[in-house]
Length: 592
Ligand code: SF4
Ligand code: SF4
Ligand code: SF4
Ligand code: FES
Image 1 (cartoon, rainbow, N blue to C red):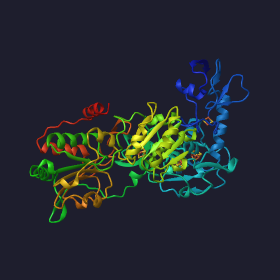
Image 2 (image 1 turned 45 degrees about the vertical axis):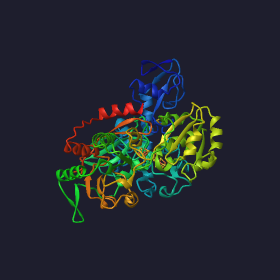
Image 3 (image 1 turned 90 degrees about the vertical axis):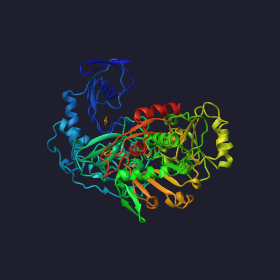
Image 4 (image 1 turned 60 degrees about the horizontal axis):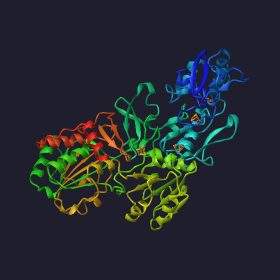
């Protein structure tokens, strides 16, 4: 510990942390620009300069460590004068004409301008025009607004481990660039958007939400990404009932602010047509009907079909509450046993996976078997690549060319898994990540690894961990079915493939958020709310149950997946109460 004085206030804090961290702990605000809590400190912008007794020059609080007896002034006249000078230089370099900037109202540089009363340009300004790179589909880089804080390229390297961005040229000519100074859209950028989320100015911004409203006019709803089994925490940014952006939630335990392209951008660019009202096939055509008519039709069909001829397929996009209801209503009440999952699940190795995603950072050997997290669970791939950057050895066991292959220390085909097992045995903190493509032989082979191994199932579907816990798994038998209920949700299904073994004349009910090839083949389509509209909860591949909150009003007559099943249960006179607390408690029992 160290006792220091900041602005005359005695503080006892941990020795070795930075002055900035010590000040923040005490609620003392030191202005920053290049600093970001998720990134390493570089001392690039000099905004955080403070006076330290005994030091000849002003020092940057974000890099200077605390030592016993230190006397610090953060707002002395000398400090403020120097800070204003730096701020004036920053404003005069490039174009920081705030009223015309997308970030106006939520720009950290603009905020500092207000804080220090910068109401005019002290020096001549933006004489040189810098380029604008609009080649990435989702975000735009305007070099004219860049303050060279380096947050973007630290985020790309340290958090995403993608190392696309760097700095070229020197001094006032310096520019952020991608790879060997090529357009972003042609670079190795994977469009995770992390650089855009950390940029303090309007140099990097989302194209889709540009100029749609100042930050103060928007509302942010915390929720959980429902695009893969990682379950990243998100903030849905809305204005006037419209979703403007999806941001990573820095406080979320799973992803700590990170998101991938699938989570951050793709849901906003989804061009599939919505199902907005119940549709019943009449004279060969799907025609709108009321919810009551739709539910009565299903009740009649269920009444006229023996339980053994009823089949249920659930998408792993379903919420915990919907899966719970499918289990209670169809399995327990209606005695239907032919219930399956639309995606394949990872094989069971132990009773439960033992590892957490956070274990990846501590591992020295990472074994990935039958999974392609770069494509399917991207944020997990960021964590793996980060561990590799720090010296962990990555071993990939797969017959396919997976996205992790270029980062692997060793790649083996599934037939040679024993080679991988032998090396993994040498590790002090091994982590094994396995997916649904893992072969039975590989599953047997990894059992040879001892107790220190942390196993993590990289499930290919979103809510597969909960589906499995409720007994909704692989093994659906299509040939026995005369009435098929598909809780498709938002999943994209290949209709032909899915229905190829379903007997002709089977009555098909689909609850779906979107019209698809599959809904075209249905007899009854029930309109389901999508990720931004629905409520409920999801369980990630670690077994963590997290809330899904509705950010905007459900479109048309759509309802959350569990609400549809609840209405059906009511219509069938089966009283099944469902609440997120109850479902979470029931899942917790099944998962532990
Ligand atoms: S979007 Fe992601 S990968 Fe692309 S440059 Fe930014 S941080 Fe790097
Ligand atoms: S683009 Fe943004 S984050 Fe990157 S250096 Fe410029 S101002 Fe900083
Ligand atoms: S890794 Fe998965 S949960 Fe996280 S943002 Fe990407 S799609 Fe969403
Ligand atoms: S915040 Fe300390 S130098 Fe930029």
